[in-house]
Amino acid sequence: MATVLLVEDDQRIREAVTRALADRGHVVRSVARALDGLAALTGEPPDVVLLDLGLPDLDGGEALKMIRAVSSVPVIVATARDDEREMIRLLDAGADDYVVKPFTGDQIEARVRAVLRRTGDPDRAPELEIGGLRIDRPGRAALLDGVELELTPKEFDLLTCLAERAGEVVTKDELLAQVWHQPLGGGDKTIDVHLSWLRRKLGESAAEPRYLRTVRGVGVMLVDPDR
Image (cartoon, rainbow, N blue to C red; front, side, top):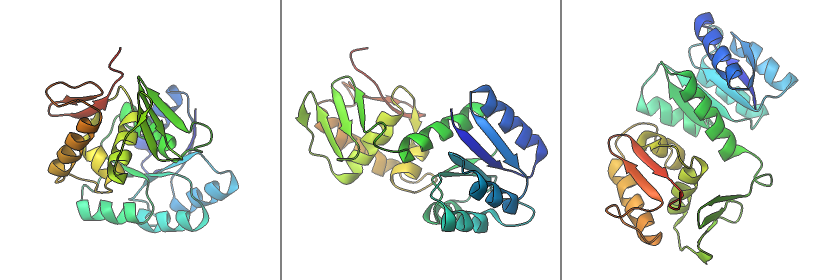
């Protein structure tokens, strides 16, 4: 369960997101204006902020800069602006993730969980274990059946991103945003190349997968091969 601060001026969306997150066990505090969100943030810090860009009193991008000036709280930008350059600017400005409207309750809740896993206190859950794979996040090391893997920084980030959502299909757009900080398509070849290198180091191939399973036309997921 997390405390989510929702900054959204559209009452219909605000009520729908609040209901969806509350039904999934989260506590939601919602406001309609950016300045009210900043006041709520400094008064009683939430675990994550869901920030709309089209706010009536202040542009969401400016609100993001103000949030980053006073807090390191994870911020998910919710927007109808499906624009690559804008998304890159917002990620560079400090957003931790983004979601494009319209979105479902399951999608936004999955983003909340993923952001909290990535940005949470590493001392609380420093390691991930999936089958014989163990990932030491603080030490940035990965071991397979007790043997350390020789991974590049991007390979480690890619493996960790998939391991944090083990059993879930992660789309290539999500991988671009979370590992390469590129929010939209155009990096399929980059991802495919890194997945190929990662498979080789995990002792598998696309034809004979073990940990990394490709869901054609959707994305990739990391699984326990013994289950």
